[in-house]
Amino acid sequence: MTAPASIAPLREFVGAFGRLLDAVPDQSNEPRILSEGGALLRTLVARDNWLPDAFAQPDPARYQQFLLHADSTERFSVVSFVWGPGQATPVHDHTVWGLIGMLRGAEYSQGYEVDAEGQAQLHGQSVRLEAGDVQAVSPLIGDLHRVHNAHADRVSISIHVYGANIGAVRRHTYPAQGGRKPFVSGYSNALLPNLWDRSAELRLASTPA
Ligand code: FE
Image (tube, rainbow, N blue to C red; front, side, top):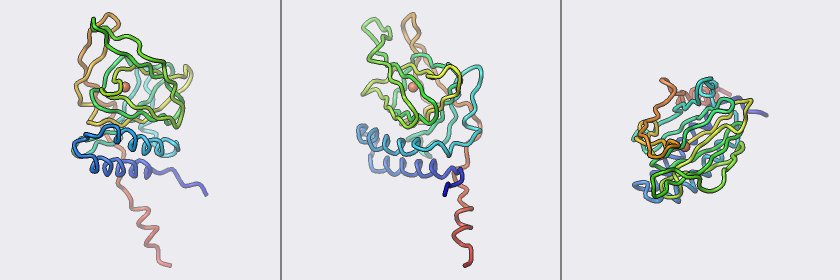
């Protein structure tokens, strides 16, 4: 039997991620957060049946970042990145840990490192993420990258988790001519998905025999 499309997997993910951070005070144990949080994200993106269409819409002008959930104390946030055909980010940093899970389509992530002259230089191989894959970034393991949709003819979507309310974090882009420019990304949406209407399951459970 196929379950109907439901946002329950996202609600369960958010709950599990909050419990993980409860167990890791001060977010001090980043390897544990990335490892156990990465496993939670891998489970979430293993199925592409829960993201509401409103948070999967591309924009012809630029890639979209829809906030799906922000933790009540801003320990973490969950975002859907929607890449139109061929769309790309500039080279940028995050300043906090981040997990990237590919939900639909594919993307390339190319790492960068700042050299002694303050110029962002290619670092390592470009990584191609396919649906179901998870990657991590952070100031400890490599924080600069440029991401682009691997497909020139269709939308790709990745689900990101960050160790802050990422849309309100001061970070940087790294222009080709060198140096870095401050930016605050914000979000593409003003309204959030409703994770919390669990009435259908309660009604089902309370149906008289
Ligand atoms: Fe990024």
